[in-house]
Length: 249
Ligand code: PEP
Image (tube, rainbow, N blue to C red; front, side, top):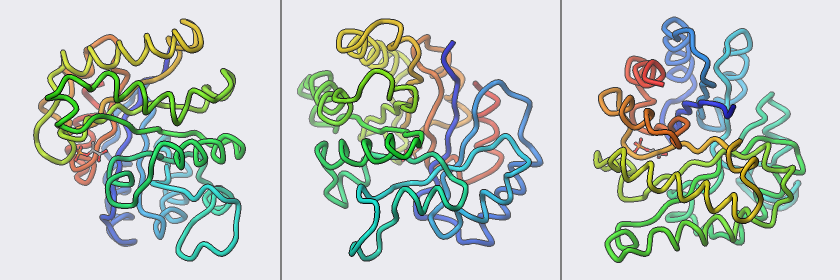
């Protein structure tokens, strides 16, 4: 059975003290759940977050990573640096990295390879812009994002991959894909993986939905058969909201 997952992407929010305060609130109110619960604080708080969550089932994830092992890449962070603070999981391909930092499929394929070589878990984000959806190009676009960044992987590497379908038009906009739109795309993604690998592998991959998930809409979205949880932005910054979403899974 594939894993259910709720992951919070804190983006460039929360300094060290705020990170510690939010973690403390999350620890206090985390319900018993079969789902994996993860948070992705900013780099400067990763070590403290990992230490604070050592005795908790909540896992810590990095928000980005450079593709090279080390070298003259001012301001960048490598896989081994992330691992050295206890963190073994990384978000790659977030639409904000693609839009504001020029990350394209070819670069993301390299980052994914680096993460896999370092035996890290990858939460790989992808999804169409509004224009793609309006023009009916969204399935083709999503298929090409997967093909270009992930389908070179050997089947075995997929045990480290979690997918996060995040339609760009629904991220931080308050506009959510309908549960039916999410299910339709998740089913398509699973079918595409089955065609390129096999059905067993496709059935084993957790596919999260991301885009304005809130306590009020989480349950309906998570009830869809191919939606295995959520990647949560804005609503992961308040313990009450994030826990509300965890309870919905
Ligand atoms: C995200 O950025 O991954 C995201 C889903 O954001 P939000 O929940 O705020 O739409």
